[in-house]
Image (cartoon, rainbow, N blue to C red; front, top):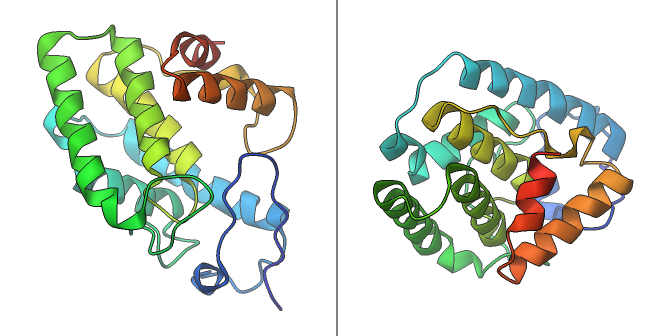
Amino acid sequence: MGLDLEYIDGQTPIDEEEKEGLRIETISTKVELDEFEQLNIEEALQWVLSKKFKAIQVFSEKFICDLHKRMYGNIWTWAGEFRKTDKNIGIDKHQIPVQLKMLCDDSMFWIENNTYSMEEMAIRFKHRLVSIHCFPNGNGRHSRLMADIIIEKLFGKEPFSWGAGNLTQSGETRTAYLKAVKMADLGKYQPLLEFARS
């Protein structure tokens, strides 16, 4: 039995080779995959809630990869590992470590120099992280959780609500989110910031 996935607008298709990394062989549809992934993500959230983090820790390749592994490690063998293929979005796969290091260094600079408001910094980090597209799948959910960790654990503010809807399914909330992401692609972060707090 194969994994038959239908994708909605803005989702990154999983390559056949990546599908072989599925740990639970009974999963055959996108709905089942989403359910199992959500359970794994909820475990990761419990871990996040139970910990305290420092900026130097959060803005590191190790933390970023470990968080992805915690979110998807029960489902995918490649969770927490950089993608080995190029995708419909994201940078060249060979550039991932360098670009991620630059993003982490920039983020530390932003904090040390109060370059942006706390919320804008978290949103800028999220946007650049998802633009790099480090992993074969789960980059959107991972980058949103990273933004929540930054705003809540580093700055002591409420986590973002992200439109208070399910962003993994088609609908008005996802459409509004993708529109805000496209504006951020143009350097206009206010719509994404407003969406994150809506």
